[in-house]
Image (cartoon, rainbow, N blue to C red; front, side, top):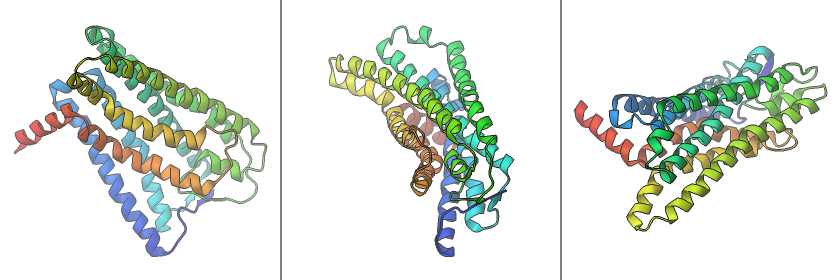
Length: 299
């Protein structure tokens, strides 16, 4: 078994963290579940863009669920131990969901590229069959990409300290505690990060280069503003997600600055899933109109 330290500090400090984590977790689940229900009940939102958004919201609920309940137990001191098998399972689950999010965001960027660059052919190019295939490929690709890494990590030998300086099991912590050769795992982590994070980021960047080029060719200022508003929310989420993910995983050596990784992991697993529904709601006119109609109908 391993012992998770969580955040060091006084009892009052840790309790305040528990309150913040619990509040953010509740808002994350409510916010993302609300988006799924809203899209399901609003016929005007039955488009590929909102189908992918529902996939993202569903993913975010499980991503934060895989972290926060255990983290709260760790900070309260009621559930600080974690077995090796559960540790590997949590690592596999979180990294797989993170990889799936990378693929989903690149698919959403490709969807916006088709919508803005080929508006007249969009409905035929991005039909329901292709939407389902792209979403399914993102989920399968995310979980398959991490399978090898999880297997290699499970083969590591641990014969020294059993204390993990974190509130979850991540790859850096396992490598720091292992007494066997960690080079194969570090190499696999780096290569998978390049394939998953960098490759999906390149697809997203190329899509947005074409999108921006098409927007700049629009004559009217109103037309440019309307075109950009359809992808501004997604661009905000992409910037936040890829910035923190590249810091955590795209590096030659995984064993450095575990305290800093803990802070960035908090942002990635707790803050980002909370921000997504608010970004898509506040910066998307169609979602705001659908939400207004749903509330009006309820009252």
